[in-house]
Length: 311
Image 1 (cartoon, helix red, strand yellow):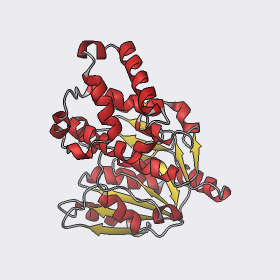
Image 2 (cartoon, one colour):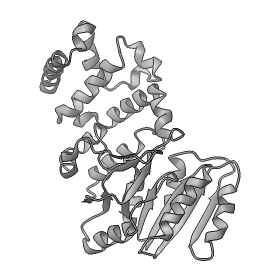
Image 3 (cartoon, helix red, strand yellow):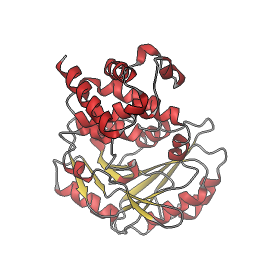
Image 4 (cartoon, one colour):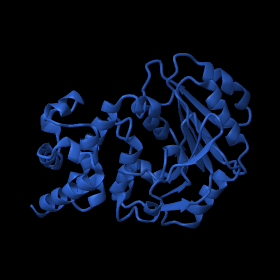
C-alpha cells in the first residue's frame, strides 16, 4: 500500500534510526526502498537484521546519483498506492504517522497529497516549528509561489502522495536548495489537492552535515537557484506583491550593484529574468544607505511593482 523511499548516503546510524521508527508504526503494509549513494555497503550490511520481517529493496550506486536524481530513482522504483520520500536523517515521530496519512487519503478521493506540521529537531533535542507564514497553509491554492518565502509544507519526508502524482511531477534535478519548493509549486499548478494535519508526525533532523547547511554556507547556490525559480514563475510574479518583494530584497541583500554581480553568482546575463533586470535597474538609482532602510525599501519596492505591473 505504501512505499517508503529512502535516498541514502553514508551515516548508517541515521538510516537505522529511521528504520527503527518504521518498525514501530501501527500501520504495517509498506515497502522500503533504499537508494544508496555511499562509497561502501555499510548501510546494506546494517539492514540485514531487518530483512526477515521488513520488505526492503536495496540499490547501491557505484557512481553516486546525487540528490535529487537519487530521490527520483527511489520514487521510480516504488510500487505502492502511496509513497513517501523520507531523507535518512529524518524519522517518523508518531507511531500512527503512516496510519494517519493513509486514512486521510483512503477517505478522501479528491486529496492527492497529505502533510503534517513542519517540525525540525536539533541534535540537542530542541524542537522547532518551521512555519513562519502559517496562514499560507490554507491559501496555497491561491498563492503557491509564496512557498519560496516560507516553505510551510517542509521537506519531502513530511509528505505522503498518491502514486498518480509521480507520473506527472518529478523533482527537478537542476536544483539542490529549492528542489522541494519548486516541486510543491508544480504540484499545486498541476491541480493536485492537499490536506494538512496539524500534528507532529515526522521529525526533520537538523545537523551540520546536511545539504541545508552546505547551501547556507555557499550563498551563491541559494542566489542562483532563486533566480532559476524566478525564471520559471516570472509570468506570475506581478500577481503577488509579496513574492515580488521577496525578490526585491534578494537583490538588495546580495548587494547586486551591477550586471556582472549576476555572473559572479554563475548566472549568465541572458538567463536573468526581465523583471529582475527591471528591479535591479531601479535599485541602481537608489543610494545604498537608503535602500538598506526597511521603510524606504518597501516604498521603492511598491513603486517598482506597480510601475512594472502596469507596463
